[in-house]
Image 1 (cartoon, rainbow, N blue to C red):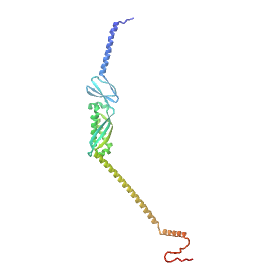
Image 2 (tube, rainbow, N blue to C red; image 1 turned 120 degrees about the vertical axis):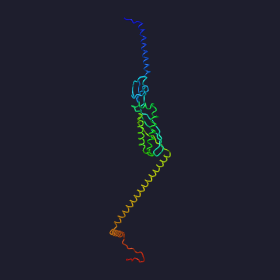
Image 3 (cartoon, helix red, strand yellow; image 1 turned 90 degrees about the vertical axis):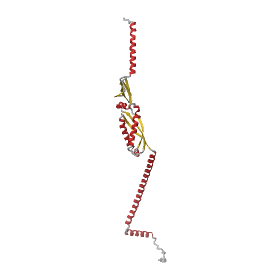
Length: 276
C-alpha cells in the first residue's frame, strides 16, 4: 500500500490557498467592475461610453456593459403627472388665468435622444413641460374672446392639447391625458358676466310672459269668434214660419193652463160684463 509523504501534503496546501485567494480577488474585482446591469420594469437603459451617448436603448432585463468604459443610466418611461399654470390675454384683452394638468411619459425608443437633449430627466416637468404649457395657453387664448373661452371650452382644450403634443414630441415626450382644471378671469369681468346672465334671464322671462299673454289673447279671440258664429247661425235659423210656430205653441200652452173662467175686471175704466 502506498504511503503519502507528509512533505507532499505540506507542499500541496500552499497551492490550495493560492487558488482560493485568486478566486476571492477575482470576485472582488468582478464586483467592483460590475459588468452586468439590470433594467427594471417600466424603465429603459441609456448607455454612455466615456460620456458619449449610445443611440442603442437597453430594454428591461439583464445586460452586459464594458466596465470602466461604459455607464448605464436607468430612465423611467412610466406615466407621470405634471401640472402647470398659465396667464394670458384673450382676444378682447381680458386677463385669463388657467391651471392645466396632464399625464405624460417618455417615449421608450427615444430615451437616449431625450437624455442627450435634456440631461437630467427628473427636471423634465420644470424645464420642458411647464414652458410648453404657458406657450400653448398664450397662443390659443389669443384666438378667442373671454366668453368664447367659456362656451367653447372643449375646442380650446383640444387646441392646447394638440399644440403641446407637437411641442413635446420634439423632445421625445408623449401626452396620455390632458385637461384644463379651471379658467379664472378678473373680478370686473366676472361681474359683467353675472350682470349679463341676469339680464338674459330677465329677457327670457319677459319673452315667456309675452308669449303667454299672446296665447291667452288668441284663446279669448277664438272664444269670442266661436260665440259670434254661434249667434250668427242662430239668427239665420229664425224665420217667419218659426216665429208663427212659436206663437201657436205659446197659445196652446196658455189654453192648457186656462181654467175656463173669464176675468171679472179688466184694466182701465170699462168694467167686464158678467154674463151670468
